Picture 1 (cartoon, rainbow, N blue to C red):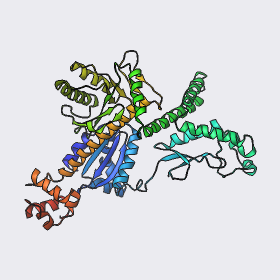
Picture 2 (tube, helix red, strand yellow):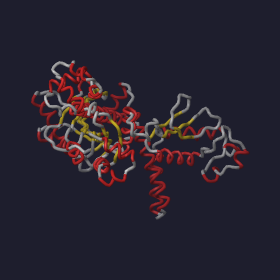
Picture 3 (tube, rainbow, N blue to C red):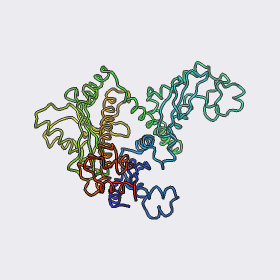
Picture 4 (spheres, rainbow, N blue to C red):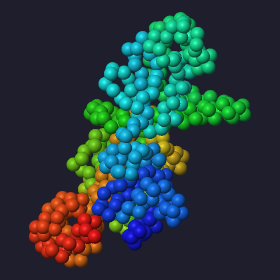
Amino acid sequence: MNNELKEKLKELPDKPGCYMMRDRKGRIIYIGKALSLRKRVQSYFRPATIRNAPPKLRSMVNSVEDIEIVVVRNETEALLTEGNLIKQYKPRYNVLLRDDKRYLALRADPDAPVPRLTTCRIIRSDGALYFGPFPSSAVVRTVQEFLEKRYGLRKCSPIVPDEENHRHCMNEILRFCSAPCIDKITLEDYRANFNEACAFLRGERLGIIEEVRTLMEKHAKKHDYEKAALWRDTWIAMHKMIKERAKVRSTPEFNKAEALTGIRQLAEILDLPQIPHRIEGFDISNLFGTHSVASMVVALDGVPDKRFYRRFRIKTVEGADDPRSMAEVITRRYKRLKDECSALPQLIMIDGGITQLRASRAALRTLALDIPAVGLAKQMEEIVVDHPQQSSIVLPHESNALKILIRLRDEAHRFAVDYHRRLRNRTIRESALDEIPGVGPAKKAALLKHFGSVYRLARASIDEIIAVPGINRSQADAIQRLLGNRK
């Protein structure tokens, strides 16, 4: 293990994220996810692990020359990021996920003679309704089971179930099936129940979630903790599913009228002194805690406007300290606007919880600026406010006000991660050439411009490398030896 890799292993954050292992030639050979990047990645390099590992794992670890990480906000995001990175880079050691594994979705075909809910991993253009996919299969199956019981939906597989099928079926007894196959319910009423289940999956019957919470509390008060736990698990699964759907719904553009309605709602809900025609949103992204970056995105009248987006490299904060990093960015951004006598936004949105929000508000007070600021928490999409009487505001997921904040938060996160990735790739791309004597910044830039990547440079011949202006034969020979083309 080289010294640089040893140092990186020491500095890994105890945060969720994804890690990418690269070989000597800069190729990504393995991508994984972790709830704690520090614990997971360091575990690969323990002597006992290497000594007792199967040949495939031992070979992979021995090939690792460098490691990159991407810090994310939670385990779900790490799972999704891992899948996307594996599909993009196709590392040769990721055998288990190279088959393009897909997440689970719910399928509902309203044109079926007796429709039902089924699970699937491939979404087709077949006229059916699809909900998802969702990262957690357990969430999908829990919500499916709840809806089947609540609305009496059939579980059996025949296209048109009949009395003969019912004779061998226990679903009516065990799963609360309304048994349309023996006319215990009319087909019209059955379809009405099926449509209600689909309405919930579209996010149109959120009151059901509160009913489930009431049942959970009712059984808990009766000390029937087993049933209370079952309702609790169902309640949690519903929240997770609706949250994921809210993220999907926030992505498409909504019209100008909805956006204007949303900013008026924000002004009323947050008791703002004026309608927030300009909202500025911020997010922090880290790379090993030493390459922290921030993004600023802007919404004008509720609609993101990329003309005003800005990127920041954190200058004064060591390590992965999001609150202090956020305070630095807020200070730099609004000190400049104040010094230039430029117009200020009517609302600031922070991607994060109360600690990031308080750090931001403290920075604004230091500048003697009174700009309203809120956070957007990741768990239940709560609007975080720093008030003595109220710490958060929960809005319906169909609220235009919430949609504006979610879209802006997702844009800030995307923009920060994109900048973070560009810096990471530049660091990885350029660092492989830093060890070559006599190859300074100008020659390194010339090599990268000529070949396009270290990967192509590693496969170039001596004559092709010498063709780059300023590179002599001894340097070309050193490049080949360093990048693994020659012994």
